[in-house]
Length: 243
Image 1: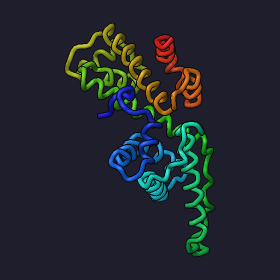
Image 2 (image 1 turned 135 degrees about the horizontal axis):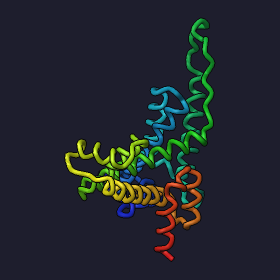
Image 3 (image 1 turned 90 degrees about the vertical axis):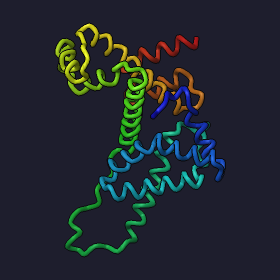
Image 4 (image 1 turned 45 degrees about the horizontal axis):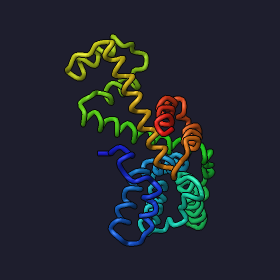
C-alpha cells in the first residue's frame, strides 16, 4: 500500500536514479515514477485527445522513453517535474498528430468531422495532476485507516459523497454501515481529524514533487493547483514546525 511520502524518496531523487542506466535501482525508480504519476498522465491524455486508443499509444511512448532512461532533460534546476512531464507529453502529442497526417486518408464521405481541437492544455494538465494528487491522498488515508483502525477514510469519504447530511444523521448512517456505534459529537471530531490528516497528505505530495522547496514555493504550487484553501492550516503548522 502507499506509504507516507516523508518515508520514501523525493520525486527528483527518483528521477535522478531513473536516469542512471540499466541498473536494478534505475529500473525500480522508473517503475515507481510510472506508478506514482501514470494516473495523472493517462487522465491528461484521455482528456485532451478524447481518444482512448491514442491516449494509450502516447502513454506507452512516454513509458518507453522513461524505461530507456531517455528523460535526462529532467532537471530540478530547470523547474518543476510536472512542467517537464507536460512538455514531454506535448512533444509526444505533436509527433502523434504529425504521424496522423501521413497516414492513409479516409474516403471523402467519411471525412465529415474535423479533427477535434485540443482544449486548454495547461488547464487540463493541472487538473489531471491535481486529480492524481487527490486520488493518492485518498489512498494513503485509506491505508492509515487500515493500519490504525481509525475510520478517517470512511468518515471523510462518506461526508464527501453526502455533503448535505448533518452529523446526527451521518452518525446513524455510519453506525449501520460500519457496524459500530457513532455519536454526532464523535463524528464531528473524526471529521476534523480526518480533514487534518488528508490536508497533511496533500501537502506532503506537493512538497515531495519539488526539489528542496521553500515554504513560499510550496504555497505557490498549492495556489496553482487550487488546493491552498483546503491545505492552509496544515501548511501553516508545517511552517511553524521548521521555524
